[in-house]
Image 1: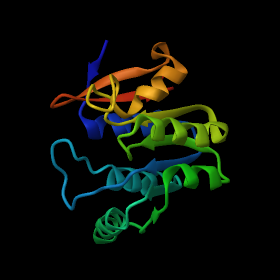
Image 2: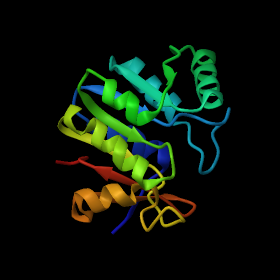
Image 3: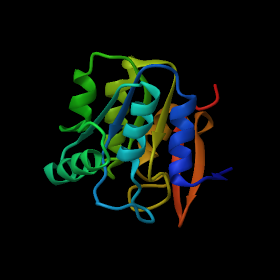
Length: 175
């Protein structure tokens, strides 16, 4: 059963209930302003972490996206924290433990599962994982989260409607 939340509110709720640890985003802002299905996650995560004293890292494999995201952060007085790197490789190389993981890059469900597997041993107990675009489209029944949901089991996720036919997948929010 899906619930409904605005994308921004879901993102902030998930990070707020996540345990201490690094906040990591895979896939950053792609446009200079917030609109419908294109959220402003990088800004919201960076601002939340800045205000609440949490460490934030964001990775995207496309230089243009990284440039836009860092420009938005700089314009709003926040540190430029987005790095151009493949998400799976970035997660494999991280040394810190992760308290919140936001996966919103490739539409390929295999990429999302690979990113989760790269982070799995670095997740602190009760870490929260949020996967965007978990609605039914060409990528599968649960969008980019399809392979991850098959791996961990549908009974272990929350599916949250975020409007306009979109859905996100949350793992570990209220354990």
